[in-house]
Image 1 (cartoon, rainbow, N blue to C red):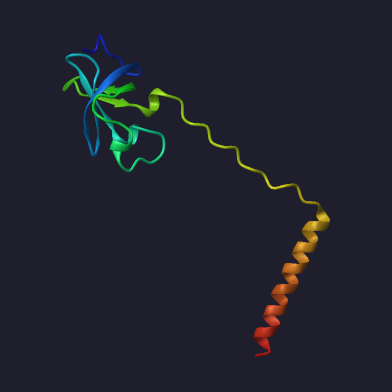
Image 2 (image 1 turned 180 degrees about the vertical axis):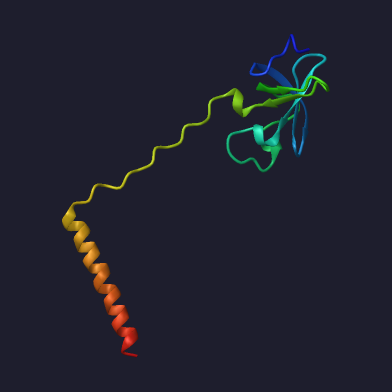
Length: 120
């Protein structure tokens, strides 16, 4: 088996079973592996049935092969690139005068609140 499948290899398989903890994927007639729920998609997945079902053909990356038991750990999310995040919007540049006006207003408001509390 280790001659046919290698860690890091990306191959297609067929989902043969779906459980709450992951999906079993057949790699050939005799070999299957497990995709843990945390390796189904990028991001959080609450219900695995939202992502895969029995009979689906999926691309998987082989994460590990236990030489003693022959168990194969697979990842669907590592078999494809991560989705790109939207770039963060930067705040528009502020000039010194605008910043100073904001600082003075905040300072005045705080002083007014303090004076109100003291005069009660």
